Length: 241
Image (cartoon, rainbow, N blue to C red; front, side, top):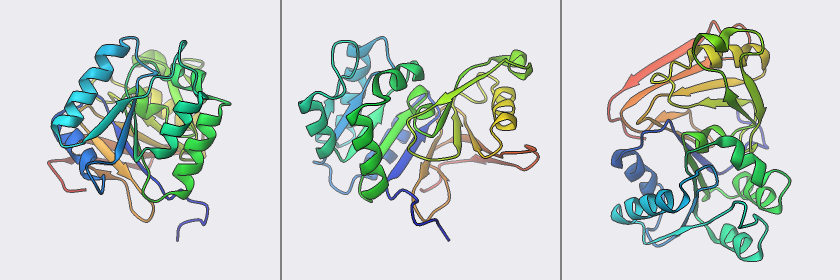
């Protein structure tokens, strides 16, 4: 039985290294191809190139209304036009880069309040992210700690995320950047959390009333908080969501 306040929206997280199979699965979640899709490049330092690449990829996959929603040093999150587009969007997609930039520009804004409210109450609303964009979506996010150094006391840093899902940590590029240690360390210091490690070219769909589902090729790990002794490993082929 799910708690009554469990969000109704759908969250899609990619581990990075996206390919057409992942993006096609994301597009297929839209009930109609003409519904508005907003690409948010806040995490990226190569804004124009990143926006253009995702806009073209999603259009090639059938999405008819894909726009770049800029939120950064020159584009405030609470601009009336930005908020209007957020209210209208069927899918909001956060690109990769630096997840701290996402929280730096969105924390305490009306934009984030609306994003959370829509995700909480609108069963048709989709929020997706890749790499850093995925890491920023839950209540907490990992922003530091690499290799064996992540196992040392003080070797990791866990900060508040966007808060769309409670008690969850998502780590990306999980196998490729050897991030087992830092996620395990984070879970030992955040015992109320579930840890989700996503390999590249792997996507997970999280929606009310269902378990997380691997949406493309790749591997994902689900680590239970506390002792970190209960670990579920999945290496799936091209499974259906």
